Amino acid sequence: MRITVDEEKCCGAGQCVLIAPEVFDQRDEDGIVVLLDAEPAEEHHAAVRESAGVCPAAAIHLAGDGA
Image (tube, rainbow, N blue to C red; front, side, top):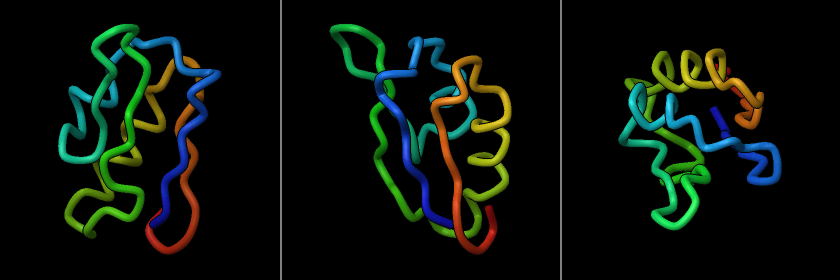
């Protein structure tokens, strides 16, 4: 699985950080998503898929195996 994020679309809701804190964080100054791991281990794939699914701005994009 490969993750990309669109910082321009991100609205700073933070759901991704709550669901997958090993993979996502937020900038302190504006809450915009920070991608910590673009190719997370398989044990994080379900949480990453959930994060992408609940993102209100559709700013998380998944590709590859496990996406």
